[in-house]
Length: 350
Length: 171
Image (cartoon, rainbow over all chains, first blue to last red; front, side):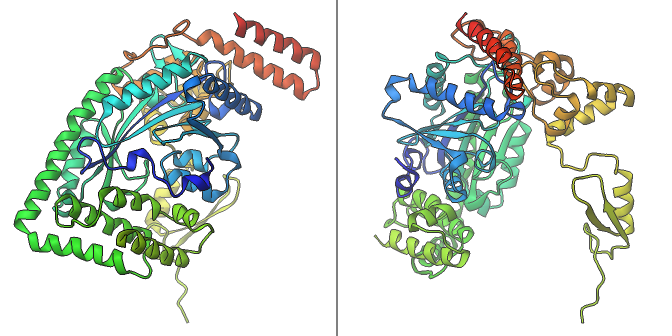
């Protein structure tokens, strides 16, 4: 499996199934781990980084059940386009993509998990799933963590738990993120109030591509900030209790729009599909915005000739690096806009 | 012809102060109005680079609770294993090795409480081996000594270090 083979596919987490998948795009959990006998990344020599990679590769290679499943990609050896591609696909973080020095990622063939090596921490295990099912995701990542831990010593402190390069991750080293599609709350302008209440209970809100990214296409990621003093299950329970409240708000807002401004809503959704179906040139930002309306339209039964998995896939496949990989060459911004419009027309008219 | 009045970098007023900052690697030109120039000069002794919020939060906490002398001596304190100074940590917001949590335990505690509202882990523990891995930080030092010896072409010392590392790893 090369990156070029990965391009036309789409990860399990985008298939649009699982609980509450009309609103919850995906559930993601990541664990930060460090080898006990190496410095953290900031103080690693080039030799240390290579040894860390070797140690972790060997530990993963000992896991028999993964032999056919996991593929390594040497991130330090990739072109900028390929790195951006992996980031758009959510298989590596922005930091991993833009970093320097020996670093790699092990990718599960169905894209249900990835292992980033030499990111901010020596190892970041990430599990992704379609829809809202954090307990299943945690069982899975816990199992992955145990399998790797059989073959290495992770830095652990009797009182502070798993030790991480940044004290904001110490303890469980766990970050749980739920990606939500909240177009109706944006339309009814209730979104700010909802998000403010999240930060009051120590949950962070981010855009599609993590820290510092904007909430493009009405996507919001809710995640925990606290990693110490609460167990993994506790942290998951907290998010599992809060997310349904937001889902309920979004459903109410959708029902309100359907009842109170049906014509406007229908018009917005159908116009969005009209533009996506016929534009000759379109930016990434406009695409996200319009796909968001179409997605809501399908979920509300306004449109019945488009499938949710198609739309989910388009959100990723119309990103700049994906588009260029699918096209098989690097494209200028203007050429990308034309290629994007063509890709959208073909995908939506099929 | 366009009238060449330079605007302040932070607002719409004309820039009347032109400052060339020489503290970084490359000289930096600043063009500011009187008000923003005053604000800039008043905080000029603060670090230039945008500090990550976590380090910023800690720096604030330390400034309130400690005198300038206390802070400056704390800043020079370094970890015996990885060599990171507290100053470096405050500026980049990232630690240098697992032993920093032991060496800077007291200094990190207010920050950890601030972020997590707690000082003790209650979650998962490693299934294998001892729960506290601080003893293994000896390997970080040995490995560094080995790399230094190789750089100096002192292969005898390097192989001695390699043997000690292997011995600990096989225990």
